Image (cartoon, rainbow, N blue to C red):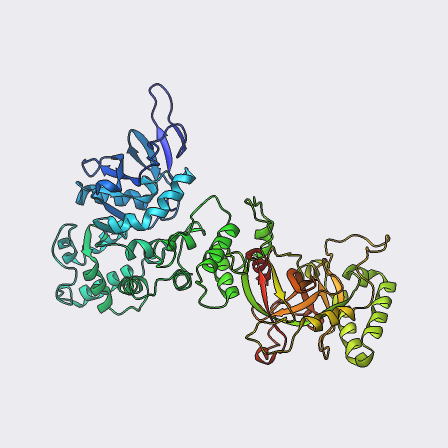
Length: 591
């Protein structure tokens, strides 16, 4: 959430002590778990210069509580301003402190819901539960009070009419299309003021999409002034600064029931919105989405687990409006940023839940994702590791001999691929090579019965007999351990050779370590990556499973793993539906 808060309690005869929320001295009593409830804040009346004091109390939704909800920007810096709640001192950031002073002065008789104060931020279970309620809280608030900051008071001298815009005033900020002005200087000050409002960083926050979108009534407060939402939007609009910020949010409010608020659309439309915790890039939009009810919120989860939750939720409910991998890439960017290596996220501490490694055979399961693929060929030879190619000349000679044996009818092209691949392996360092292929055995298995190897909607003559024929032609050595004299390396990928049905346009490649003679090398339409599919012959049916990734020889030198040179996808005659799990898709998103 938004504000970091520290607690300070006074002790007679002792020095002040401070500690985090949720520890011994706290204004928070546990909320009733048997009822839907939250806390509200009542600010005690006092003079402007006095310290802020208030009382937190539990409010049950069934009692129809009357309250306003604050929407504000958390601001920068440390929480250094002190307020007192239920006899306990808390440090909050300056912008929230200013907002509390404004509310005490201009609307002292209201009860308020303020996320940083009304939620015990250090108690994760409470935080999870309250965040799930936030769309209800903002929709049930009598008014959502938008606080843009104290700094706008500096415009009051140049724009005297601002002083008429009190918090409870009926005067409109823009009642006559223009604020009454009599000088060029005043006109300039007004436009400058409007531009500052339009460009305020508040409008970039991810949480305001929900806070503004769910509000029944909105009051925008700035300096010592306030305006109703419609008048505020009118004032900013006539100055014609663009279509972002508050203008964009107003369109979002107007389109609330037009079908534009799906989870996918919200994630895409607001991917640049700001938040302190990247988890809020998802959690901050769930409550506003028209198709995301039932999505689990848990701040204890890693960003990878949340990524998986989003993918499986959308898969379960059929929410992928475009190809699965582009959605996966979008959500990965939201949660982890553009520079994040997906594999690093997988390798971070992660505690699998029950059943995470259970094999899934139901292709309709939420954990089973369908991608379109095509068979490039079947592995007919598993060769040496890259380290052996670099340091063991005998291994190189044996590899070339296998090329001669397996591609006697096309030796020229086969040797060209082989020479290019060997030279690339010599030129690339171990780290670069280790990032080319990944061991990622999917927990999803799917079956193909009878003699049909491709979906009925495809007309390519791919049959089980053809696959058995490919595997029957497999020749050459199977996987062996490296010679004892070869130094061990973290890069355990393997060279392989393959054949296809009628011709072999791609013959060689590099694969993850768990590759066997008879495995299928398949190409995915999106992302454009090669994978290893193991085909288990069970007499009257095939059982297939993704067991790793591969790189075709001609792609090995390319810096990116997703290659775009094979663009004639519609002409492919060996299409195959591929089923895999979210974790494997995550690995495939590595660039």
